[in-house]
Length: 328
Image (cartoon, rainbow, N blue to C red; front, side, top):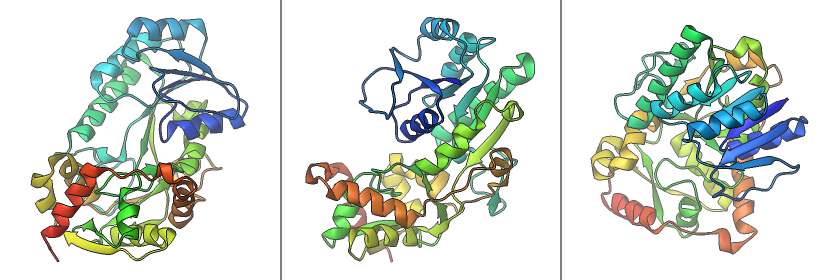
């Protein structure tokens, strides 16, 4: 199978490229070449701007790609460019959307692909919805071979996820120093963390499946944790105890709007996903990596080289400020 990745060097996409290579697929990456990534086998690299429709069209015409995986599509304008370039030239177009598109707050605790799409809080989610709508129209009108994939919070082997504080070493550093961190709300909303390695099995498994064209799938873990449990798991991997400060998301949002949009439009809501659809389509998919295992791997990566233990000073300042508010 010949696969083109738009992107291919990010948190999720790097692992998906490796999954393709392990299956013997021929992989081409099209990106700006600004991130270094090493792979276990050779890949073809095209350096260019994904917004260049002529480049996309030439790339599509050079080879017949069985699948194009778009990891860097965020606006309807970008989708319009892709449709113009790839229409009639490829076997399948897989668009990375997001589970943030689902109704917020959800009217039912268990989220399926049929859950309504609506997010009044976060522009990122609304743009993803608009992208999906344009792709679905292209499928209905002209048979554009789209498959929509919606990941939730998916972490790589060097990520330490958090709702407030980024996905780097900052939160773990604060924990190890005995400094408090913020667990939004009462810390009891439910959440799902998915290892990129697990996601890649479902995502790559959709490639080349005619039954997946014109359809949408989310791919998440089945392990459900509260946010307090998420931070406690990170702390155990870091060898310490967390000091959690609970602050309402509605208080955080106006103080730090960039963080607040993702809280009110996503992480403040409990999310539990029904993964039966992706399991039916890709029987080999199951979430094998527990969050505890994932965090042990990430902390081991940071501890292997102290130079990796960089702290985000702006995030630290924000956490200091929020913790000083002392909402309990």
